Amino acid sequence: MGIESLCLDDNISELVQKYSDMVLRLALTYLKDISDAQDVCQIVFLKIFEQNKTFVDSDHEKAWIIRVTINASKDVLRSQWRKIFLPIEDVALPIIDKENREVVSFVLELPQKYRSVIYLHYFENYNTSEIAQLLNRNEATIRTQLKRARELLKTKIIGGFENE
Image (cartoon, rainbow, N blue to C red; front, side, top):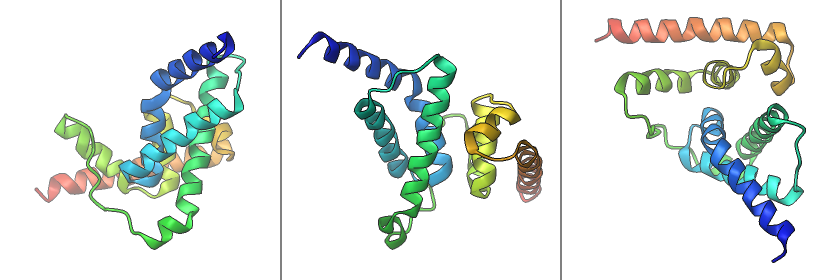
C-alpha cells in the first residue's frame, strides 16, 4: 500500500465523517426507507472512491455530493427491485425529540418535489438559486415549490393539532 493510497483513504474517511449524515437524510427524503437510504450512502462514497474526485473548494465538494446523492436516490426509485417490493410505510425516524419527529414525519408525507426542496432549504441552508442549480430546475419553480410545501406543511400541522 503506497503513500497515495493512504492519503486517498484518509480523504475519503474525512468526507464520510463530514457528509454521511447529510447524504443519509437527503436520500431518506427521496426514498422514505432507511435501508435504501443507507444503500445510497454507500453508493455515493463508493463513487467518490472510484473516481478519485478532487474538488475546487468545500462548496463544490458539497454540491457534487448532493447531486450524486440525488441521482443515486432516483436510480433506486427507478430500479426494478423497488417496483417488485413495496416499502414499509412506518419509517423509524432516528430523532429523539418527539416534536421534531412529528415535523419530519410531516415533511416525509409531502410529494417528492417538495420534500427535497424543503430539506435543502431548511436543513442544509441553501437559498433558492443554489437549490435550483442543484436540482436543475428554474429558480422561480423552486420558490413556488417552497411556498406550496410550506402551505401543505402548515395544513398538515394545524390539522394534526385540531384532531387531537
